[in-house]
Picture 1 (cartoon, rainbow, N blue to C red):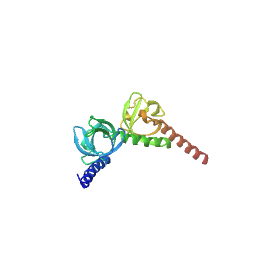
Picture 2: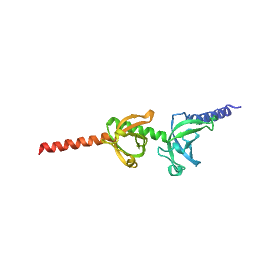
Picture 3: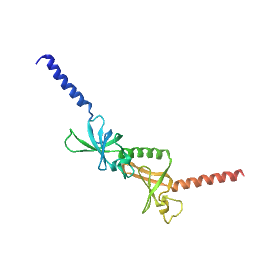
Picture 4: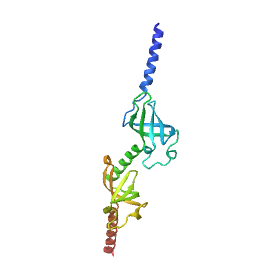
Length: 206
């Protein structure tokens, strides 16, 4: 074999190695971009950009809201930001991965709520359910309002609150445990206190 042929073989190996090096390794917990290649049987098949492998996003991992019709949530050609949950199958070459958009969205929601909590912001959210002990609200993630924190007076039946959008103060937040405690009572009391101050100010002036 001549030097020239040797070089050609070497170059061939190098370009193949370079191509393989360009493919990033996919690890659990990584945030990746995936293009939707197909939608089948309540899941989206995506090609992970820069990795040369495919992954699967089940319908329940596509959105923080329940998914009735997967076709209304994603289309072929959409590029999604996803987090890698686990590897499927032992064969790494065509290794498939279980991916989630919902968990990434929820993480962002938690970060926003935490910021609102630190800044003492009042948030708005719809009441999605009435359960024993209080109200369940949807702020992108599940929030809970204990019965004692709904109003500043006794309420016998909370059913009328279902579907209503109320204002809340964030009382407690623990993202690692998916715990978010809200209070509507605190907002009501703050508003009444402001009104009282305004009335007293008027009285003194008059």
